[in-house]
Amino acid sequence: MTKATDFIPQAYRNNVTEKGSFQWSAPSNIALVKYWGKKENQIPANPSISFTLNNCKTITKLEFELKDNPSENYSFDLFLEGKPKEDFKPKMQKFFERVEVYLPFLKDFHFTISTENTFPHSSGIASSASGMGAMAVNLMSIEKLFNPEMTDDYFWQKASFLARLGSGSACRSIKGSVVVWGENDSIENSSDLYGVEFPEIVHSNFQKYQDTILLVDKGEKVVSSTVGHELMHNHPFAQNRFQQAHENLARMKQILVEGNLDKFVELVESEALTLHAMMMTSMPYFILMKPNTLEIINKIWKFRQQSGLQVCFTLDAGANVHVLYPNKNKEEVLQFIKNELIVYCQNQQYICDEIGNGALQLK
Ligand code: PMV
Image 1 (cartoon, rainbow, N blue to C red):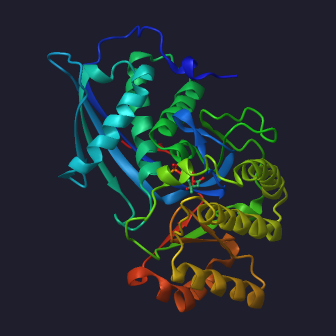
Image 2 (image 1 turned 90 degrees about the vertical axis):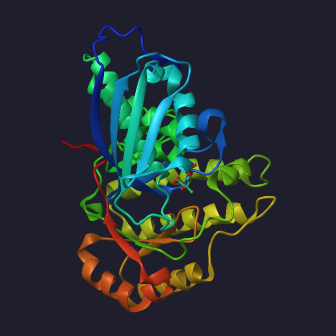
């Protein structure tokens, strides 16, 4: 089994790289079985499984240049959509600190990080998964210059490992189209250290599965996910929840293989509500759903009952609603969303996405 120390490189053989640049895109992802609660170093308290998305992405260009005078500090500039973004720097600094032991070249270079998202900023969609995913693959491209013999498996595994250290769920944003993170009995080679591609053949019912993201609330969250994870320590239901996530992952595996959409709907919604139930039963307790989140959920239930279509919702740590449905029902469901749901969105904003294939090197 791979250990964290396996990602500490031996002395690099190739030392000729002075400057250059890479550019990668990495997508966001939506969890079906949710990760909530963690141990030290972003080790998940329970396993999770997600669909990788296709359209909600971060595109990051990473330029690097050998410093004239190597120093004990990290040196980088950070731009979001072409403008300096000072308030992102502490997070990046922390990321560099966490990954330096695995990427010992970090202090030798000055980096220029230019990043943009395909989704509107402050939309309430967290860019941390796609953002850290895109950074991680760029850094692996640099490491590959030092170690050209690196295998593809190592490249992808370590990219996910690094992304995890940036933001836990980011480790599921490297590969597509279904990713499992967290050691569990149902998925061979699953790991707490990185995400792995779902090893079974996913039923064609899930091909091009749709995710329409309804932007209910774009405001700052009242409780960050960092604090939320923390509150699972000493949570009265934590152990049961962690156990349940293991069982639900095994169930989800079977559902994805068999293509059972009724069971999919039931399990995905139950997971979303369980995640929020954990928040509501933390001490201190908190609620991230908004009145319009509940309005949407009720409308989806009513529509499902009337139409017989297997449309369901899921939620992240926020008020926005992800509406999940089969590609074959795209037209009817989109019409329903436009007719009945977008009134509950801020400025009627929503994003059409679908299951995707992971990070992509550009140029
Ligand atoms: O990756 P983090 O620390 O932002 O946690 C996100 C956790 C959820 O989005 C709520 C669930 C998940 O598995 O993605």
